[in-house]
Length: 302
Image 1 (cartoon, rainbow, N blue to C red):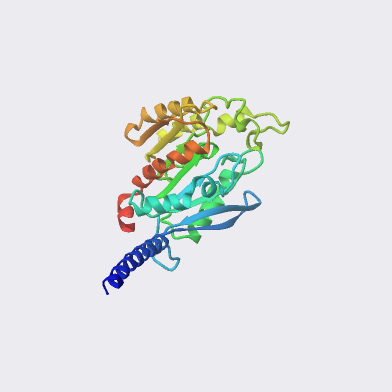
Image 2 (tube, rainbow, N blue to C red):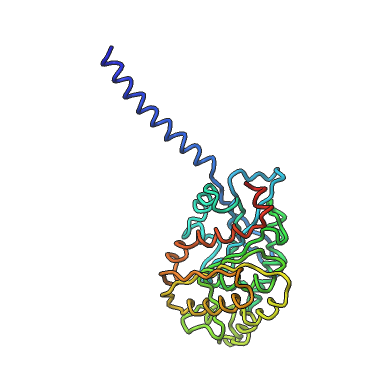
């Protein structure tokens, strides 16, 4: 009997460990968000705008609960799938939400390769985003809407778009995070895709400096600073960015810090203009944005 009891005890320990592992897996699964794919028709684009959306754990279309929404904009050569494929946005958002680092939020990643999120030479992407895409998304999903928890972020050309939208529409955006934003104050370098993407090309195929200048943030800054609304900005760049964006980001930081020093954060990190850098620091950007969800809304969601 003694031998039987000892063997039974070891078996019990193994079974207990197994049940603990299974329970932990069940808890992890139960607290997981989901990724969904969709598309919204756009009169401005004359085609659909595709997207991938992250819906947090517990999201229920029938519930009265509503969530902040983050619009996460990709770079020039990417599409709506890149944050899921290169930055693990599903696992990242689950982890940050579970730890309480960010409130539960909907994250929407639209797709518009090469459009730079402007009304450019080919696509009316800015009009499409605000007139077609945002109303469709906020009608389809349980977002807080308006400026109450509408967040904006992007990388590279998407960071360019996020900065523009924050400055141009401070009454529509709660906070902005821009990772390596391609916001060249004067002229993009020869290696920048801004020089080649159709968004900024003249009919003869040459780069349109006038169009670039009209759409970039220096043209928007005076308008922004005249508005009553102030948007918190998180700015990040790699110190070895081969496109010179670290310098451009420091210029933008100074422009903002001179007027709203308590509402701008600069993060210069070791890194280049690549997904290794962006993925390594996306948590920091998401946490910054989460802190700027209006407090009474964030508390309702916990």
